[in-house]
Image (cartoon, rainbow, N blue to C red):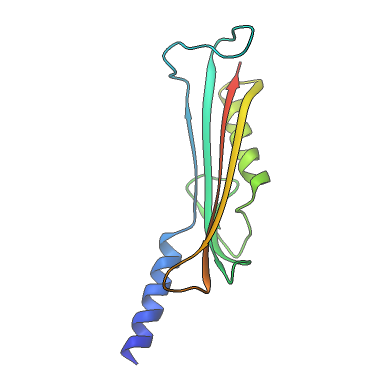
Length: 130
């Protein structure tokens, strides 16, 4: 009985402590310019949304696609389109009007030792100019 309670507690802690979204931006690029014709004021944006899924496809907890730092329950927000939308929205808020470079990464892996839980995350990094 103690082992089952400990297993349930550990599983609950894994679920509670994961699932987040974040947006990080910077305009401090040491006065470097980008593009073939030099463009001023580059903006670097990095977005990450991660979550925990049951059997790889049933969302348990994941980062919010609308509000960075918040979590959602039972919603599939670990998607490339949500991450790109968050990144372009953050760049637009900083005054950027054109994307110079956009990189996306998606990763999925089972959590050890609970193979029925899958950790997924999507990352988007972009460089935009004003």
